Amino acid sequence: MDIGYSRVSTGGQSLDSQVDALVAAGCGKIFEETASGSRADRPILAQALEFARTDDVIVVVRLDRVARSLPHLISIMDDLSKRGVGLRSLSENLDTTTPGGRLIFHVFGAVAQFELDLIRERTRTGLDAARKRGRIGGRPRRMTPEKVEAAKKLLADGTPVKEVATMFSVSVPTLFRWCPASQR
Image (cartoon, rainbow, N blue to C red; front, side):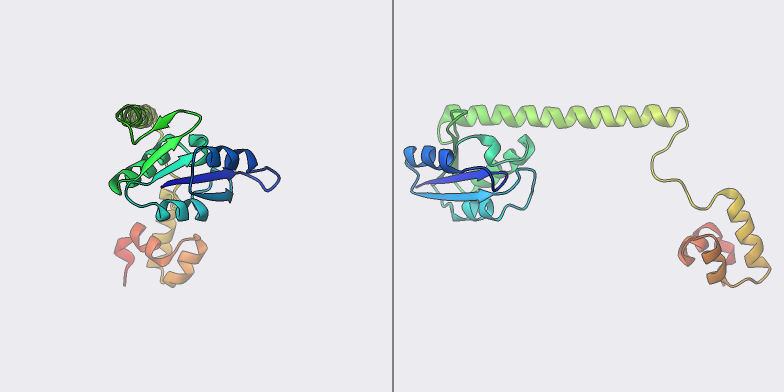
């Protein structure tokens, strides 16, 4: 069975043209949703994907109606292909039930993986360059060396641990991490 899925981002938009195209494509059931494509939780899409059985085909007017990004599309396609369900996009003329459609989809997957690898490599290079310049990531530490010395002195003078932690706006475990000899 061909299962249609149509989506618009806002209530002010109309699903009519997508539904008409899906009906013309021969869809036996059509799921309609109004939700932003950037949202990961789209309940109607989840229903459509769950409804599909082996040898069914999910039909969409455009790929951007079903997935937020290429990695998201690949994730959906991986799940569908494990279940023996195909995907067909009317605008992109992509049909994963055909050998050519599967080939194109695998090319998309390879491009997406290449893109992720490039992002990781650029991030690693940028972090290495920043470290060489003495910059490290993360938020600034609350306990500077001066504060650690002051906390040690206060603890040695008998000030209660909770009071010292409050003075420096840290938790007791954080205080003990910085002043381990002060644990009583």
